[in-house]
Image (cartoon, rainbow, N blue to C red):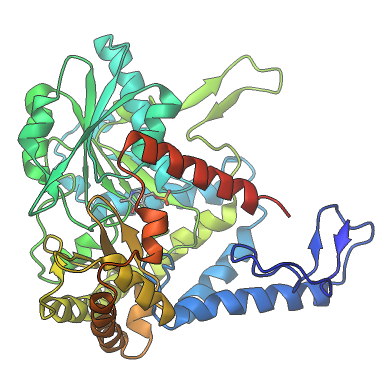
Length: 472
Ligand SMILES: *Cc1c(COP(=O)(O)O)cnc(C)c1O
């Protein structure tokens, strides 16, 4: 049935367009007019753009400005119909992907790997996103260790703050994932605690640069030494920080070593679709040696449909994304990335300094572009409730309760974001003080996890939400 926009539907916060735009649950018998469709889609896009163009949304929207975005869309259009895997028909695709991989590797100091053996040089693939990059690396460790060490029940050790994509790889590929809690006050993993959990089944350890909750870099130098000592792999998740820490380092920020300069690092993920400022849908996974990358590849040589082989989890992927990613790197250049990093940090440093002046709030670790804070005396979830009413969108953290704001280009491009942020945050602190002893709205969503029963309740709730979102 095709529902008409004039029908009134009950208000549903997850379906704000219900009743306002035509919805379809069957393909319309006769196609609708282009102009009418574009009118609806433009209205939706404009409404959604208005939310982040103020600079009030944490992370999420990664691009280097309107002109940059328009340029990438133009490049996308040239190759949107091409398929990256068709190397014979579309040779531009492997040309561009090989260069994306090489440029990313060089940014992450692949040159530090000194070898004359072409099998032992940094190499990688382009994937559809950070999650796929991580999944592919974990699969490579599982299969490499089975072949080289006869490990049948593989285990991977990660800080609890590392991304859930690692847990996903555990569930998908039958790898046991061992979580190491991070310790206060610095909220980074204790290398000794990681080492204590290494056993004969350990195939790799994980560190983040930086982690999603706090943007912090784990003690990677120590983890690297531990990986070498025990002859296990080490993955550095640079999905978030891989395309910004290299520039922060060049700008003179005190950034510890996090890339292939650490001799124990055997793989890395870095998202072109975050601080690489490409369109959404690309990431790079890198390996210290082709011996590992080989275990990512997949083939079914005797398939009736032809000789099937695939380097990543996906087979077909849009050439538009590959071309736009390549264009983002080459168009911005080092100069463009340095300028972006400089203007992002100008906002982030002001926000950080402002939070330091609020006695009720405590910064988590020594933040750079992701600023996380918690409070000993107030419920930060009350602060989140208040900031929402002012149009701010934080990421809510738990265990312990905290909030983070990830600074991206929209903050650098909008006017006076740091000043507006701090004015509202100070008002939010007053609000939280006035609400002391009451339960914040945010708590209803985030106060449950942490116990087995709570975790089951939260899972049921979010799966139910997916079901609801997937209903027309
Ligand atoms: C975003 C992110 C990922 C996952 O990346 P997707 O591209 O969203 O799949 C992994 N690790 C960290 C630290 C991230 O911030």
